[in-house]
Amino acid sequence: MSQNATTQTNQGGQAAPQPRDDRFFTPAVVTLIMISFALGMSEFIIVGILPDIATGMGVPLTTVGGLVSLFAFVYAPATPIGAALTSRFERFHVMAALMAIFLVGNVLCAVAPNYAVLLVARVIIALISGTTVTTSMTFVDDVASPKNRTKFVAWVFSGFSVAAVFGVPVGTAVANALGWRWAFYVIVALTVALIAAMFKVLPKNHYGPRSRFLAQFFIFTEPRIWAGILAVLCGAAATYVFYTYLSPILQDEIGMPADWVSIALSAYGLMCLASNLYSGRLGDHGRGTKPLIRVLPIYLVQAVLLALLPLAVMNPIAGCVLLLVLGFFMYLQNTPSQVLYMDVAAETYPGSLNLASSFNSMAFNIGIAVGSAVGGLVTDTVGMHWLGPFGAIFALLAAACVFWLRIDDRRRTAAGAR
Image 1 (cartoon, rainbow, N blue to C red):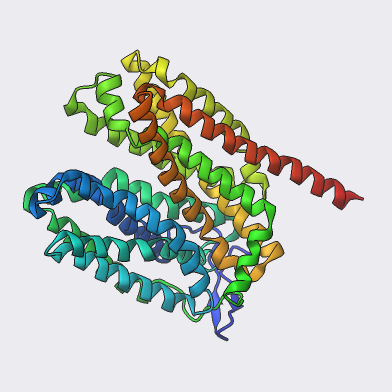
Image 2: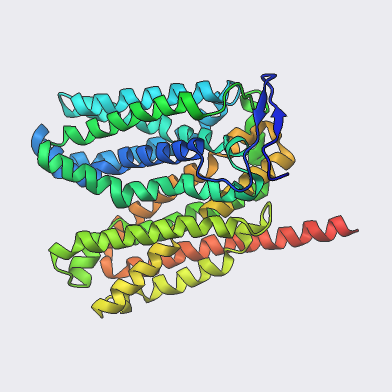
């Protein structure tokens, strides 16, 4: 591809400009990243305003806290189903419809007269959030050059990290100053601006490879897809076993003063952002299964560090450093796994590309639910001190999945050489 912009003809019959190799942060790319930011802010904001909602609605704190796990449980199955259902429609129209539903969900959150309405609003948002991210990924060929493909994936995922580091604290500050409903009004205003930007800068008249709804799910007969899904699921669970209880670990295990916890959480969030961005570099190493295979030693190192966590927290400095390092490991698998799903789908089931792009979000959210549940069980039975070792077990399971991928890759390479 030359340095000058070229054109290709999409299925709608119109010439679509190809992105320049030397540009990345174009208006279209920035808009898609900001959509992820808005989705992440809406997903995570509940954590920052739990006490305010509980007080304002007169419900127990644990009841409001249930909205967090409910979101993940709805998000995970809705993402692949939504991706499969929407794949037959024009991509921009799908994106516009999803963002309109997202807007309605957040308006309902802002005006909810009781907890039941708030719960329904959170379910509405969870139902479309994963599909929205999936649809964003399908714009990659039209808004990013081939050499920036993995960089685009990494930055779209990073929108969620940026929301956790900056968006949620801003929303929490707004809630503290004006009331918790205003945190959602901020998201509503941002969404309106993003919808307007979408209509101006995103490519239109694009249809991806079409396939019947059920036929798309034949991609689940591909063992490499399952290995990638299970690796991400176990990798996310390895982190969320302890991350769910990060604040209590900092205060009760390390002995950090309560006033310092928010600073520590922000530092951890910055490491997560760095993790997402470095994940893009890992995704640049080859195609298909090869980028995720390179994550194998990372999973093994993560397992060792998690196993050492009970010893590290006995020293405040060592404990904080180790937790920050573990934060950097949190999202390294994201882009390599996305490359695997998309490339294997393109090779074996092209009609399932849209569905395949949803697998990372689906697997990661199932991992969140599994890791959080195991973390709660460990804390209640043997104590918070053992969260790290149990997380190490999940990291080893993720490594086992990738080790199988490496064996399968060598087998396929040998078979192709015959």
